[in-house]
Amino acid sequence: MANVAGYDKDALNRRMQGAVATLKTEFSGLRTGRASAALLDPVSVDAYGSEMPINQVGTVSTPESRLLTVQVWDKGLVKSVDKAIRDAGLGLNPQIDGQLLRIPIPELNEERRKELVKLAHKYAEQARIAVRNVRRDGMEILKKAEKDHKIGRDEHHKLGDELQKLTDVHIKDIDSTLHGKEQEIMQV
Image 1 (cartoon, rainbow, N blue to C red):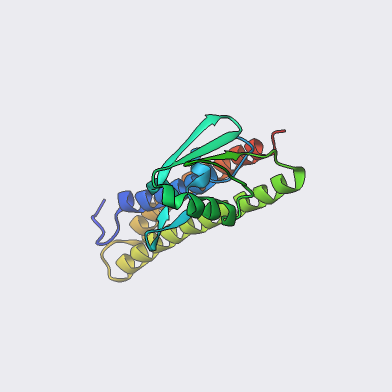
Image 2: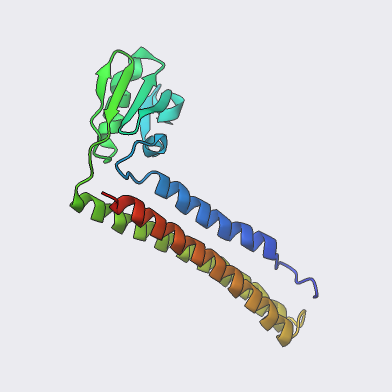
């Protein structure tokens, strides 16, 4: 196989894996009725004149399956952390106990579960689009290489088929991850 300038199957694979990894990170933040420290990952706190991730102002832990706690390190930031969690749109209401915030995880009702499934589908579609965009970039490199007579038509098709198989593997991974998350959300 000739070395095609600009075409790096491993780099394209890494980019596709990155899209899948991003999806899994987004899924970890979707609440399923069980406490997970990742649930608070998207929360940013107004601290010291700038926005900071919650894990940089306190320790997030899950002492029970239905309870999160945030041990705020600076007493002056307790109210900011409380406000950030309430304003994050996660449906959580912290209870302040000194520098410790106790955050009970409420049961999910059917309507909220369906909203979370819709959101999971949206995240999965964004990941599929990202994977297809990587495939498109690779195909354009191959098309240009054939046009510039750096590779022949047969090699273009062979590499294109390999790239399509790689894409299919990642799309299948996205679909199975989505299916697993749906099951997790809809469990009662």
